[in-house]
Image (cartoon, rainbow, N blue to C red; front, side, top):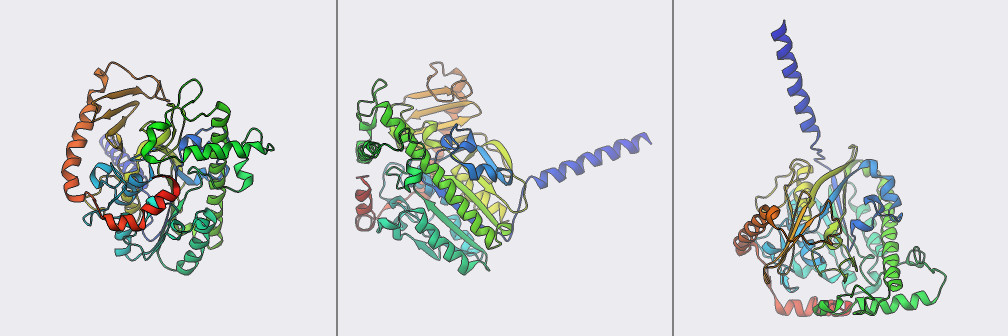
Length: 456
């Protein structure tokens, strides 16, 4: 009797383990997928992620339906390499698009996940709003429709135009399996917002001079990407940009208004899907491509460095018939594509460098910008510059704002090994998947748009 009881308890334990193991991997085999990327959306300015302003009331409302990855990082701190990583599940030092340049296009050897969805019978569409999402770079592979009208028509560079296209397209394809990529860009500097949101958090929201101050500020923020060193700010009076603390706080207030506006847009998306009875068969993923610095390390903008204010982004996943939860494991932009394929029960290509987030837990996360590489593992972070051989070391649990560079590297040897191994492997994989430049096509299709935005 005793031996029978022992066997019974062992079998019961195994069955419970199997049940919870399988149930922890949600699937939605025939679901639609909507991937929403909000340009320049850092999680450090989202109330859902602990920010003190109520910038995300709608996302808070649906948090019990959402898988919220609390520690998600982009693969770079600006739009181009980060988005290519999302689409290909390759790191910037492998795909090379935007790694040290902005004129490379994607290698034909690199497969994008929309291509895979198209091969598996999905109707596919995208609508984008900024030049670094131009089809020149290879984003349009696998899409039936790749709407980039906003790149040549600034009047369409807004969420209203994005949703006009998206809602019409969904109506036309709602009876089929579909994948839709939406790109919103209101949090990107210039902050083209409705007045109610532009002034939502401004200290003097009835002061007409506030608009003049912020206009001067925005003009300064849109200097050439080639002059990024001029964005350094002094710790005393931010004199490199001649910004006072009041002006900087105005910029933060406007940015926070843009986050609140995007939250409103996401509510519109959700309610539209609800009216069309599509919520119960649509996976929704919301993320950002990078954050925005506001003087935390005496710099303003993005694409400047690899501190958390520039690379920590939201990652929110809504899966039909699944109760959401807060997930504390680290996640990367390269994990989005394999996670989507796993949810749909589609085979993940061996070339993908990310991993499906609902079945594997990553040990560390990597971000890159030009000659710099950062690795975060548990509470440790290292930033290494391969050109100068300099390193920065931080204990994030004790120093979450990365203000105290640790001089003693003895506890960071493992992360140094990770960086060296990563860069060695990247030098091999880029021979297969590395991009290239098509100069004449770039000059005709992308360069004028970058100039229009002040990047060049």
